Image (cartoon, rainbow, N blue to C red; front, side, top):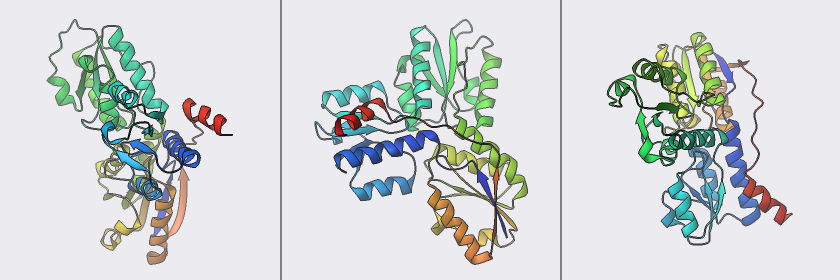
Length: 313
């Protein structure tokens, strides 16, 4: 058996920043800190912090007054920020800067009188946060079929934005449908789908052709990880999304000569290495890491955390 190891894979700059942000907060204040929603959508990452004593919450009411609260990498709505201030919480914003970019675009378009069509998945934390910036001015769609059902007048000022972790192809189909229905629709100056999402998808598109099975490391609630599995399936390869090596099943590899391994943008490298070791120990698999694109992006820690670091120095 041969393993093709996709590169780039795993943590993106936004996830790295958010995790470093929480690590540094624990270092300075101890583990008695709270995080609004999962810091990133990954079971292993969340369990690691939970075991250290971090509390993940789904409502601001769960956070004791005056506590330290981190906002997750997926961003939050203005309403959540207002509730946090009312409870006198010391907040640290670990929102990915690329998500913040979409929030700022939503605010600008709404202020300029546009109705915004947001392409994304209903219920996803990022979508909830973005829609919260201008709830009266945003309509959510996911598919070209939903675009067809839109009832906005032809003369309306319309713009579109996208969730950062969508499939490039999936978003493209919805964008094409929007442009056909509303030829004058405005688009953001630079596309919203993040560089890491695009790069990981491109790697799977290129490498899955050579594989018999595709293994994606990531959690089921990770949007970008699910897209990677779907890409493998779209080119008629058996593709599986798993959290770790304990979920691997020998039946998947009975006739497999080449296995592609990749990881979503919130999956730690350790779970990738565990899967490689599992295949090597059972099948004597060889490893070939293939780089399809170099990544050199990094994001600084949020300003409020850097201020606290200086105070603690």
